[in-house]
Length: 182
Ligand code: ITT
Image (cartoon, rainbow, N blue to C red; front, side, top):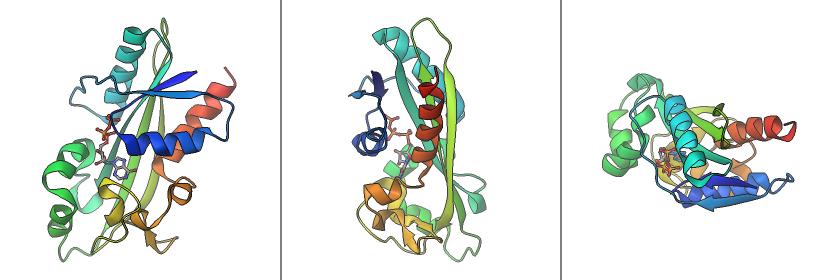
């Protein structure tokens, strides 16, 4: 049994959908942990260590973000705050008239068990910032994250479709592969 520590219900739905193909039981707890300002990796490491010690259970945490090339990686580690303040319309405004719309979603899974040191797993997906919001199937930045190979934004994809190749799918799959041979 692994406990996924998150306050984001959309992450839980996606993770449950990914884990269902494997023989690993996932439970979810919204523990709330203090996120130090730092890289995704640093946040995932400290969160996983804190939660596994606190609950005395093996846990995963995830720190994710949207990195926009033309904005030098912004909002990156500030994604959560920027989503709540500027929102998608604010991001679109910042990119008004900008041609290079390359962006990446990154997800870092931090895993830690009691009495051991944390491990991290990075997943990415590349895409572009759309010129307008499209689709309401996802959450947060999904409706402005356009995937050229699909011809759709994440907001136009179902959970199953997004889970074929998302940053979260890639990081969780790396984790699951490693965990399965422990
Ligand atoms: P935790 O409790 O797991 O920390 P959170 O929502 O604060 O939940 P993060 O700090 O990992 O999550 O993520 C930062 C933000 O990045 C998140 O709030 C969203 O705004 C955005 N984000 C992350 N993954 C996303 C996805 O798959 N689709 C759209 N936006 C995403």
